[in-house]
Image (cartoon, rainbow, N blue to C red; front, side):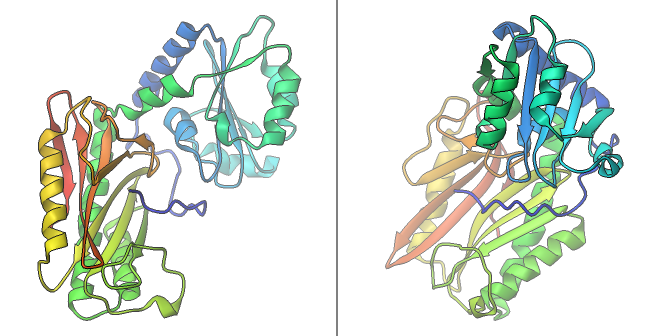
Amino acid sequence: MQILETTLLTGPYDWDERVLPQSEYDARLERVRAQMAQAGATLLLVHGDPGHYNALAYLTNFTPKNGTGLALVPREGPLRILSSGTPKMMDAAKRLTWVEDVRPLGNAPKTVAEFVRDGDALATWAFGTLPQALYAGIAKAVAPRALLSLDEVLDAARWRKSPCELDLIRGAARFLTIASDAFAASVRAGSGVRSAALAAERAAIAAGAQDARVMANLSPGGVPLPLDAASDERVLDPANAGIAVQNHGYWASGYLTIASSPGAARAKARDALAAALAAARGGAHLPEGVDANAIGLSLDEGPGDPLEAGAVYAVTSSATEGGETAYASALVAVTEHGCDELWRQTA
C-alpha cells in the first residue's frame, strides 16, 4: 500500500553537499557506468519530471520542478543536464545538482543528437514516463541507433540503499513518528480526521521535514483517502491514516489505526505484521494480507514481492472485521538474514 503521490513539489531540493556529499554521487555514477559497460552502451539518457524524478535525482540530485528534465551521461567525461525553462532560469536550476553543465531543454531531440558521438550506443533510464512526442523526436534524431532500456538493472541498483541514504530515511522515520503521534493525539482529543491530518502535517514540517502528506478515512474504519474539502472534517472511531514525510528527498511512510477500543481487526493486523517482519529477509515472500513497496526517493520505488536485501520497504498489514478495516505498519531495511526496523506504528 502506498500514499498518494503528487506532482506539486514543496520544500527545498537544492543540492547540499553536507547532506549528500560528492563522494556519494561518484559511487552511484561508477555503478551506473559499470552497468552501461556491461550492456555495451556508451551514452545513457535519464528522464525525470515532477511526478517521476527518482532516477534522475538518484544520479544527479536534480529534481525537475517545472517539467521534463534529461541527463546525458557518457561512459566517460562530464554529464550534461537539460532542464525545462528559459536561459534565465538556469542559475536556479544549477543549484539543484552537482552537475556543472545545465542547459535549457529547448529542442531536446536536436540537443541530444548533437551530444551523441560517432559510434555511440545509446541506452535509456526512466524513459517510460517520457512524453510520447518527445520520445519519438529523440528516437528519430538519433536514428538509426536504437534506444536500449536499462531500467531493470539500474532500478535494482537504486533500490539498494547506501549508509548515507539509510541515515536520511531514518531521519524521515523520526518525522513520521512525530506526525503519527500528532494525528493520534488530535483524534483522541476529539478532533475530526481533517483537523488531525493538518495537525500531523504541521507537526512534521515544524520539526524540520521537507514535505508531509496525510490521507484519512471518511467513514468509521474506512480506507484512507485524500482530504480535499472542509466537508471531510468528520469525527470517526476508528480513524485510519496514511502518512508520508520527506527528509532531504527521501521518504518514510506508514498506515495507522486510532481507535477507542482494541478491536479484533486491529489485533489481527498487528499479529500479521509481526509475523511478516519475523520472516522478512532477502528473497522472502510476504504472507497474504501484508503488502510492501520499496521506498526511498519516491514513495513507491517498486513492489515488495519478493523482498530484496539492501532495499527499504514500507510494510503494511490490514484486516477487516464487521465492515471496519484496521492497519498496522512498519518501515524496514531488509538484509540477507532479517530486517532492521526503522519505524513501527506505536501511536
